[in-house]
Length: 139
Picture (cartoon, rainbow, N blue to C red):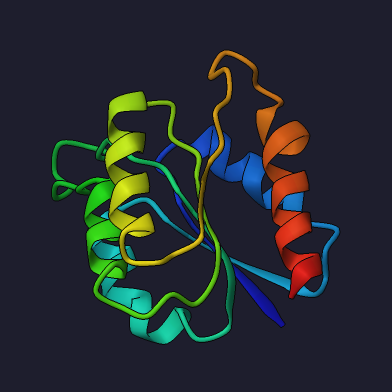
């Protein structure tokens, strides 16, 4: 079973990511809406990871929930580890994307920034899913 690990805070996009991977029985999808939670789960989930996809700007679900951090924090943590799989940056925050890209690339992680129009609600199926399929096909 191949793992796709995703950091995303939007419930709408989380549903779209799950739907995009739904017809791929060889893929197990793991999602986090907090950088801190994803980092804490890394030891368990990184082995077997085939693709990682990261957002940057994370908004807490409510005022009572801790600060979810940012995708850059996840990149900084991953940069301390040996590269294991490709990383897709699906953030629309251009400045943050460059920081994330440089952080991972400098640590020899294969990293692609998926630039998309955030007003296009279909970008996950139209742009992200083909990229994931390409990575999965490479093994």
